[in-house]
Amino acid sequence: MSEPAQVDALLVEARSGPIDGALETARTDWPDRATLTWWTIDRPTLVLGSAQPADHVDEEAAAALGVDVLRRASGGGAVLLAPGDVVWGDVVIPPGHPRWSDDVVAAADWVGEAWIEALIELGLAADSLERHQGNLVTSRWSSEVCFAGRGPGEVLWNGRKVVGLSQRRSRRGARFQMAALLRWNPTTIVRLLALDDEERTAATAALDAVATGLPLLAPALQAAVGRALSRRS
Image (cartoon, rainbow, N blue to C red; front, side, top):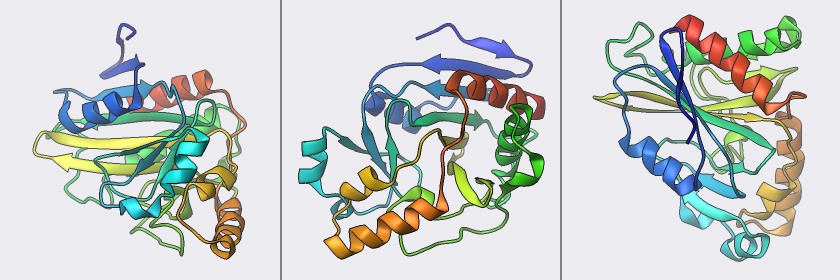
């Protein structure tokens, strides 16, 4: 694990290690100051939402593809974490933090705003970016795949989702788990779902239309997002 670096009031750290360890940390580690953690994705892993049924997954396909299947503590559909495809991190704020909100719908707005600020800094046009406001918008596939729905604070680029957010709250703080797409090919995640051939064809087409990858490098994106979150914390 690298030494944490302080950026203004936000503690920023990078951690490596097995993804199951990262997910366990997200369940148990509640820092007493605002903290941003970027996690290294070491192997392909399908991460299910906290209440997502296990039978959404085709276990034989996952084994054949060498994809681990784990579960996070926050809600929503599955996210496929693959090296080079996704930037994955979380930001935690303690109770009483200036960005704390008791409104669970509005609570993630500042995180989405920071992502948009970072993407503009990195050259994306402001009018191509949108933060989803209001309640979760579901679709046929959103209970199974995170990027098929639109949740509070999530970011769209040219109408397609590029940043997914999920939220976990306790008396010790609020944790916003963040996944940004660098590449998006829904074929693999669809192969991991327990679907018949007709459903796979429909899911692949639908998912291809609602999300996309960002034409950016992970280190630059992480640095820009860290700066933007710091300015808001």
